[in-house]
Length: 104
Image 1 (cartoon, one colour):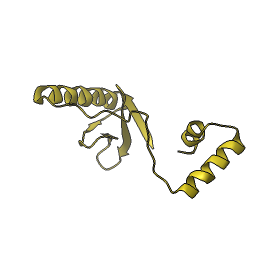
Image 2 (cartoon, helix red, strand yellow):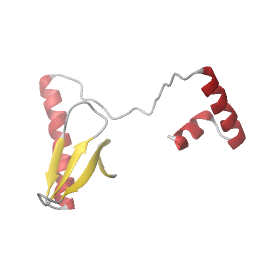
Image 3 (tube, one colour):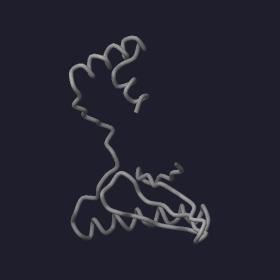
Image 4 (cartoon, helix red, strand yellow):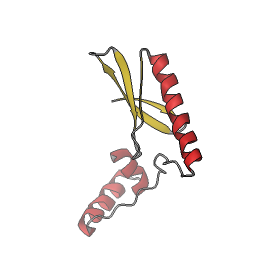
């Protein structure tokens, strides 16, 4: 998957052969924010414009914009799965955070 990032927002980028356009969509938030451009430079500019417009619209409406992931992930797993993860972590000589980050 090809991606572009601006101000912490990441977008999936694809080329639409039929329309001869690069198209992108911001990932990780509920709002649907898409954009397109005829070149990579044009697509980059449109990504920046889309993010700025989204942030401005949120401000105008008095709502907090969705933010990309914070980096905190809480998982609830069965105790047996947790035990197997701890064994794998100790065998690898890593912390649970290091190991999970690599696995994910």
